[in-house]
Image: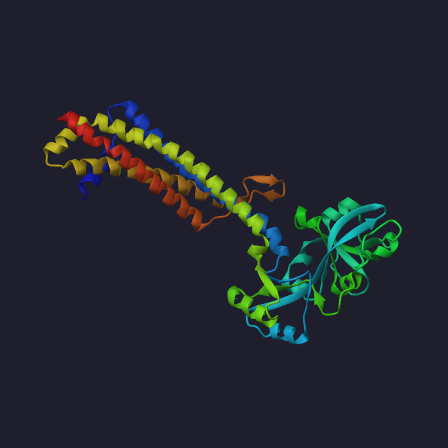
Length: 403
């Protein structure tokens, strides 16, 4: 048996004659337990909030999206579309048109973006599942699906044929708009609202969905002119290779963004917050591990006579140092692992039994990730290693004093 480890275990699990030392050791162990417990709980909670936040945009954003390198639109040919259909890894794609428009409804106004989509759009995105009132678009008449935020701002209702929504967009090439040419400066269409969707506050205030033909007529665009192409990929698709093939089909006149790149600002914000939270709780854990340093130093002072005896029996100063180093590591690892296990149980209970609720119908989102478990274990190990090494260095001084 490893001699330093054997003695370290005896010192850790055997009560000292001094009650003060026992209390200090318990406090140190509880501090490590609480630090590991809280760190994992926070990381799991933040992982849940992250996925919860991104889940809304994932319903709207495609796996891959093509934009024109110059201007707002680009053109396509049927030959190019056929080549896209033959690329392995592309499950579906949809042509879209986007432009800023003015909405007018019973003297209430709002600026939004119209998004014209074709019949394949629902194969790419799950937007129709986000419709909370009414139905998705059909080809029967000029119609739109608006966001919940827009419907509240304008006090819209679905299938209200008595009051139609007016959509206005400036006509191209009309120059400066003045009061005298106001009526001729805008292309105006009246549409029926058939549905209201709800994704998140930003998107609900931003987009009005319409059929691509209606949007093209409103914006006076060419038949083969679009703003973007959105792609849904197979799970095993190589995004880098696909992006290169798609770009070659359009002769390099487009650039592509992945879903992560489309939400670049949101992802950066979430990553920064995650790092910030981790650093704060790592600092808390570091402070807790000062108790381990104090506990080991007090133990060394209390065991000076034992140290002298062990040294007389042939133990080297290095072995004596390793005894207290091992004791610190055992205390840190055991406290950290127990804290982590209790935290894992609590997270599993929250995932299955919804112990904590944000609203009566919405449980606090948490997610179990192996990455978070690994982060806690590595953090505990490294900080415990440093704390134990610092504390064990005191043993040489105690040995000199004992001699």
